[in-house]
Image (tube, rainbow, N blue to C red; front, side):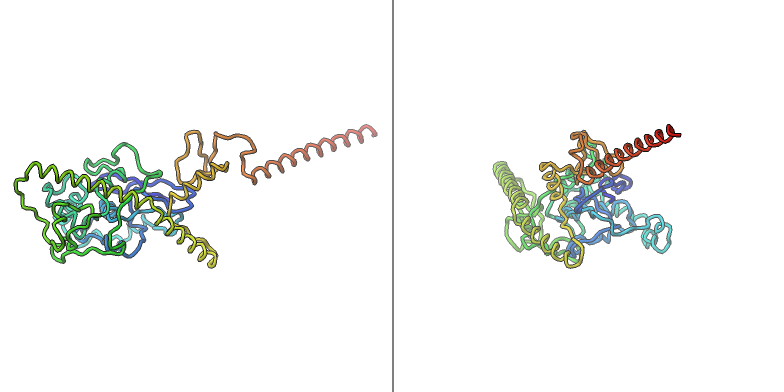
Length: 377
């Protein structure tokens, strides 16, 4: 299946290339690169991360901008392990009925404002220079979420947004990647944030301590706070140092909470119950569903190798250096000999050898009989 994982910079961030992911047994976690051509999720994802109406006529940049919003709201993007939907991209681009999106009622100024907005949202050069105005936009209705940070997105995706480079280290993130933990909103995944209909500014203030927007100096003042404007008075150096220490300690606590949340057995037990339910349901319908956990498949492959089972090809992980990929077969150079082949191949080889031996014996006896008959004549 095609695995979206690489981008390039044009006027904006454009999804540019895929890798071919073969023999996936379960959906594979991507580096937050999202494609609008195939997207389905829980309903609350659409409610939390709606299409930005302030970016008319945008093609390049629309997908990655929304991917960034999904990621920062705590959503993960997976490549399905099977192809369920096909899209005639070339045909649709030449069909005036399906490609009419670029002929709406907007002008060049609208496009410039849209690019300015997208640049500001993702810290791409060419956006708002005023930090407070940029932060206000990021926290607005069509801005970033508050479960993960933009810095975490850059590290996870590998895209150097602030310098308009395709990668931060010259490497793509198409292989196996480490999931980024976050703290779920105290009101649950179904909680939909509210915003002012006119200004589009957040109304659920002060921010909760689990939010990446949480500021002890502002949000620690108490509930019922609407304005986040801070009077810029001269701050006492000792108080400033103490506040920074408190913030650092608070961030350390929240980070530890996130690690514990990611490592506890609550979600693992939940996934086991879901897998059992899906397997039971699949048996009744004559098919089997899978739970989207690429990590589980990788662990299963590793366990199989520990038990002496050679995996052809390796599942959901990079090929070892001492390996050659030929077509759809994976040839391992670590182990040699017929004893390491699958049982079906062993049987086929044995039958082939017996067949050759029988053919040789039969051919030899036939020649002997022909020689004897010629002598008698």
